[in-house]
Each structure stands twice: as C-alpha cells, then as structure tokens.
Amino acid sequence: MRRWFAAHVVMYFKFHDGAQGKFPIYENVILFEAKDDEDARAMAEKAGKSSEDSTCKYDGRAATLTFAGVRKVISCEFSSSPESDSEATYSQFTVNDEAGLKRFVNGEPVNVEYVE
Image 1 (tube, rainbow, N blue to C red):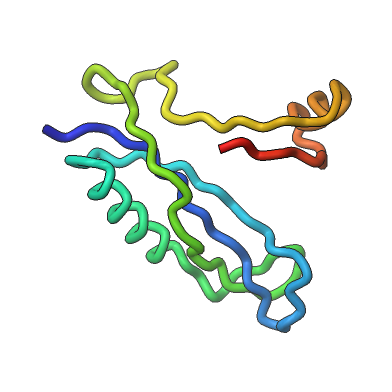
Image 2: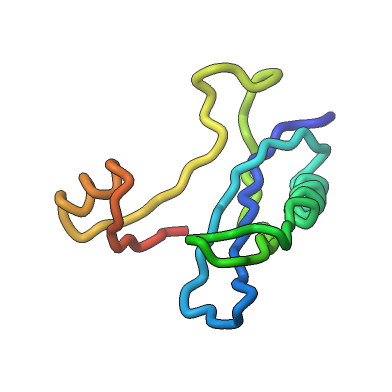
C-alpha cells in the first residue's frame, strides 16, 4: 500500500566567485506517494539532484543551486489523497520575544532557534 510523505529537500546556493561567506538555503517541502519512508527519501534525493542548476544568480551573483540533502521525511495522514486544508508537514521554532514573533510572521529577518 502506498502512502503520502512530505520530504524536506535542502538546496543551497554555492557562489561561483568562491567568496561564500554565507550559505543561502531553501528548504523545499515536496509531497511523494511512496511505499515507505525509505522509498520517499530516495524519491526526494532524486528530485533534489535533478533540481541542481549551475546557471543561477543569487543576489546578483552567479551561483549553482546545489542539492544538500534530505533533512527529514514525514508520513502524512491523509485518508486517501491530499485535500485542501490537510496538514502535510510542520516545523517548530523559538524566537526571543513577541517582536521577534511578529517579524517572523511578516517575513522579516529574525533570529530563530529551530527545534527538531
């Protein structure tokens, strides 16, 4: 029986000029229908590798979008197939204060502690 999984695929930008300094990271959450979490992880790794692109720019700098790995795979509890308003995955963070919470919600820069 196949089930649904949400895989957290981590991609980052590696700058061509060699001055890395910071590592801009994207965590893409992709749904896969698979027989188990190992199958879903393999599918996610394949998807991440196929998304690599050496012709990108980030902040005006030439870069390669690079697959870093699959951070986690979560089993989704759908009765059949995903529907509107179905939770696929979640993340847990801690911020230092309510002002940080508001910045986070508004998509503004804020220091967060990621809780696995």
